[in-house]
Image (cartoon, rainbow, N blue to C red; front, top):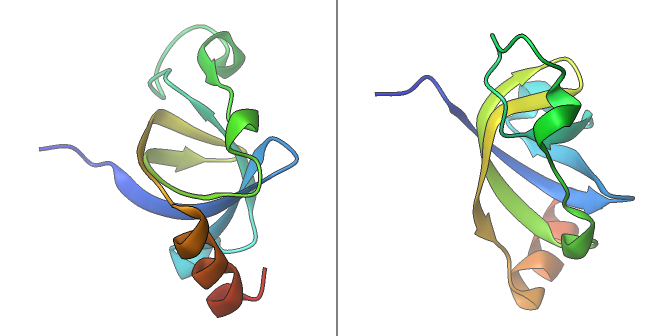
Length: 91
């Protein structure tokens, strides 16, 4: 069992603007495959998400500061679902 959390966000300017969980809503983060305890910078394994610009995505990982560590994109919203997410969250 992992301690990973689920995050819903909207890709804007190549970064993930978090919508859920509510405690993190509004934060802008980057994604890395790197685990939190790694001895090298998170940037070394950054997951580039620019190709998903304007879309809602679901990510699993551990959030700390401006990074989601051990990140994995678990779902990518279709254009219809992205439009619904924008409407619901006022993005």
